[in-house]
Image (cartoon, rainbow, N blue to C red):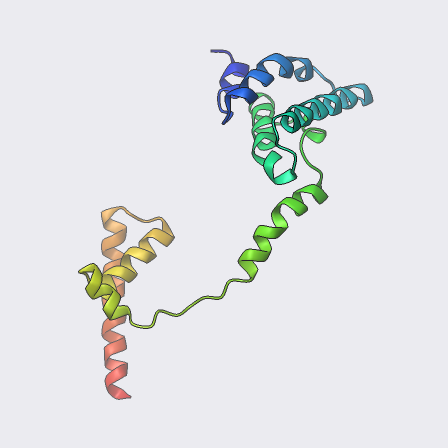
Length: 167
């Protein structure tokens, strides 16, 4: 399998793979010149027109296919001059991502009311839940890391109990 075909095979949809097999070779040879950028812009317009013809008209609907196209070009040449012209502008990326950022910003963390009750329902202990959560957060799942973390957690729990008795 050629490098181009290998890169194209990473696209998430068959229609886009077929489009790139046909049209991508036309843009892969462009140089970093005004004429080359004009050719890349025409390729970008063609891809976006094909998406619109498939009903993908909003920027959010076009986000994944455009990302696929850019990923394919980068896989072939990470510094390809067409990357400057294929995709979205900074303003368009902001419009795409702003609703998600606003949704995240509006979230409020809710404290867990009764961790012991949750642990009982799960058939485990609160410390085991904390240990597992920390392990997931740190990406540590090997036995040595988890064991070391468990020892540290047990020591912290003992210190906490001593402090609770003093209060």
